[in-house]
Length: 102
Image (cartoon, rainbow, N blue to C red; front, side, top):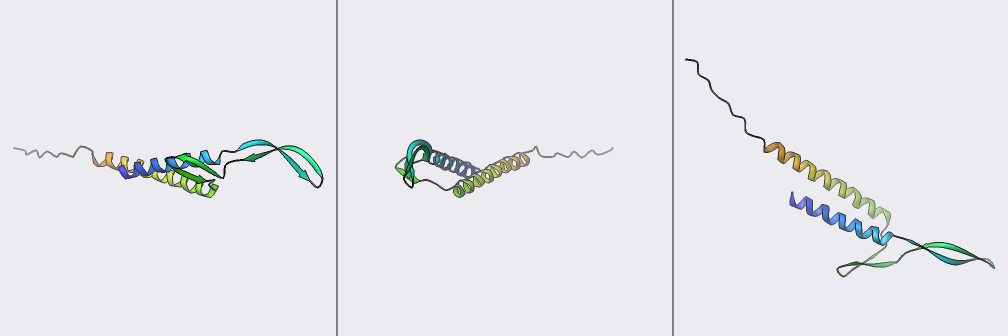
């Protein structure tokens, strides 16, 4: 059960890092179409971002995020199933009494 918990924690940490990387900010920009200029806002975000412990990551695609979310759900289900199985096998043993009629 410890390995499942570790994998859950690793997936959650990776998802947290992806969330930080995928955060976008709106900045004021100057756009030009032909010879006309207009002020507008555009979304931008870092191409590379420091996530700690010496790691830098690129902006992760949503596909990877979804794969990790599915992995997290599966790991949580496995952990719940293992707890249920452990509780089921730790039931008190059945004791049968032989009553002899005299």
